[in-house]
Image 1 (tube, rainbow, N blue to C red):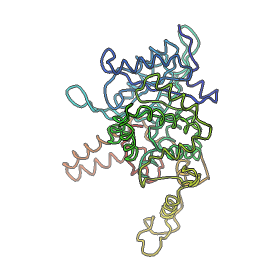
Image 2: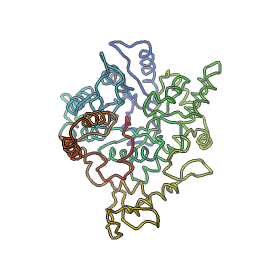
Image 3: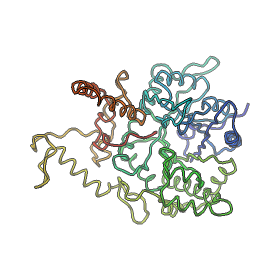
Image 4: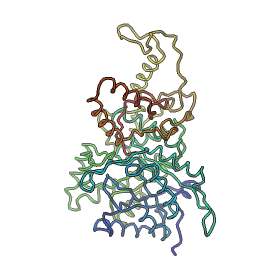
Length: 476
């Protein structure tokens, strides 16, 4: 049997090593098709590379039915290669997720990336119906709760106790609007509180967004390792990402133009895209990420070339690369101010955003607004309304330094029989219910509205207004 390499948990918790994780997308059908076989062969070659801490196996990525990641993971665990298995809430109820947890433990899987999952895009004789019984926060709480209830650290039949899950989560710092970015950060804090041990952000090509994510985490006192997501582009993939064909994957107009230009070369841009990925690896190391998550359906030779090229850069080269790889959305929301010298963020909130928070705070306290501004933030217009205590989540986004803890229960998971996740799937279901409700009588609509108002949601957990009004369409 092949000797096992040091695993992901060991490298992130006991060493200062800059770790590398590579992605493996399973195939369709009982046996690997041509594309699946190529990816599988590349993954088997990477088993012998000591730099690869883990292979990350996706779970029906993009909403397409694929071979079970648990089955693929078992094959590599037998060869001594650590793996991360993605678990999506899209296709399973909470009972199904519980059964899957026990199956993963039985197969020897210890690293799990908990995600809500992309909406299905196909199905047998029609579109598959999404489940979304819980979202990614609920999934993390469920799997962490299994350990407390005796589902982890179980005595193996032929040896010592098996370790509990090492849980990961996702976040997207590349959103364009405040009502999208702030909920992503606040939900990330909920994920860490629910039990996340490491974080893998969505992919993007905006270095300042990477920097802002790490700064916000320090501000919110979230002390978990983060692996930067580095996707090796091609012209075809750049077009898909630019057209929003894959949720959460962002390629700007400027980057698409660069990809089109470079793809006209005789090698179809291969050298450029591999160097771009190597520069992102260098940036991730310079910013303080604990490692990288390399993806892009590439051969083992290409993965090795990216890592070798990144290792050849000088220690401070990443600063110039950071100015170069700045393909963020035009006029997009920024939480922190900009450092003109580096093009990165500062520790101070962006002035316009900070000013808006001051106005919101004045309205929330019920203070009288300047003349001609209309209603106050209080129903009575009185300035004597007492201020609500600010939670740690609110403090992280408003600049308050009074507390940095994440206090208060996660409301939508504290009552499992009535919880409803706020993911894209349940948002679509809610729209369908709303259209059906509109045909009822006024009294029925009022009763239905009262019943739905009683269901706790993530927005009820002392979130700022931006969280309640933000987009719910996310696969994180």
